[in-house]
Length: 305
Length: 293
Image (cartoon, rainbow over all chains, first blue to last red; front, side, top):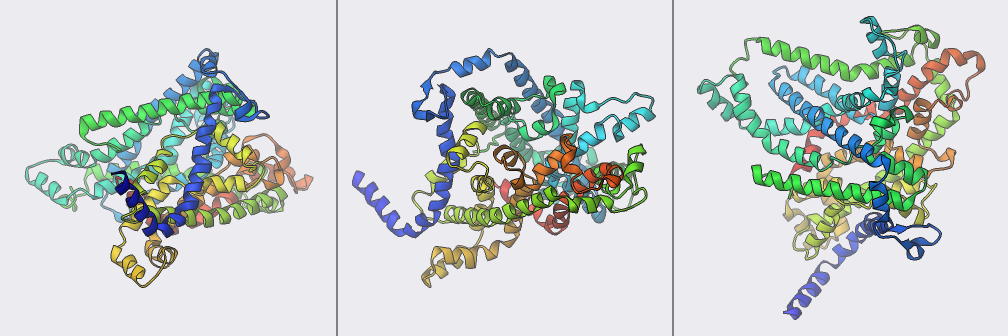
């Protein structure tokens, strides 16, 4: 038995030798830039000192994790991360679906194309520019305050107000991603058999009936897959956007796990502590992904793998 | 829904067109605002309030100041350098990986694919990634922004799916004629995958062009900063020294306010220009990516 496996491997290596040599740089890339950092995450269980290295540093078990759970920031950043994701799912997730449904109803091809061009464009603008524009528009002399004043309100710096931070974050996210997010649903919509609509019309279905009984079931698989992916990232808010958008005045509602890791890790150089937080974060993320995937398999027989 | 009411212009359609028009305008307006503000007179734009539809006293003083600014110019050059090297390596490495995983009758393909797909869901995290760059001596080097990002697993899977749709007979025939894998990849597989390659170039290119986080984290030498890091200083910190470099003090006030806007336009223009040409490939790229494993 062992012999046959061995000879099989030998035969495969001989047959595909040049293919394996070709792919070698790719594998080396994954080892150096993905698996080596995964091994590097063991410093979460240490009191890591860069001078002593991983071998020389002292093991401390779960002390860094316990320190994090007892930290006054734990509840705050966990709450902020989850709330941003949940609001993102409630408001941000349906937005591109609705846009796709509205676009799908359009009969004017040229107009449809124009709307698509305009809404896709925002996806490609850099986060630095987007947050720059947000800052410009929300400052006390900015456009949004001009409008507030016009309706009798008073000017304030909106981006400095912790109570408005999440609204600004989610709204700008929708602004940037609504068009791009709709592409996948539009593609799914175009795959629905035209005959289903005709049959529904003959049965006397109106526009609303068709939406409920033909269109939505037709794209439900896509919706579920996108939702699983979204749920799997419930603790994975964008640190890039947060770091660009927040400031000391808004930490109370803005600071998320990833931005906290950035501050205590890269800026304050608490290597082990920040790695432990990161490990906790990706562990929970992975569990969420597995659970969401399992649930959806049970409910609708749709899953990622 | 498609054919029946096509003659009647229903209330729903009117309502739909209104909603979508407003949405499109909301998406475009901030960009339009920045463009018109960048072309306006700086003093007047400071006093202006409310919507801005056309430039006030149009002039290009802000753009002249931007192009005189040494930091912005060096940022531009750094970004272009990083972009070109990145794209060459990204396309080569991603193609090689996708080619390997699109071949049949390869014994270790499945386990290797698993190892690679796993990295989409599990990672060491930000800090081990940073420590890794340190241990590889990639700090304060453009290579630290290029090498770790040579392959996006997601893109590689898109490309692999696309390669799999190419008829096997083509590469088999070439194989019989004695062509090696590299030859098959570059003279048969890649030329047949041009639309997907366009999508790859777009995804990778935009990623590199817009990237700022790792650059701001690992680069200490200001002369090495790419454009987005300079842009961040100008837009988000109150550091006016970068902004007003190369502006004579007399113009300072008039130009000061508009120079931010002009920098945004200069930094975003390449993407805005490339965008219409690549738009037709978007759906294709996303759909291939969405095909289940």
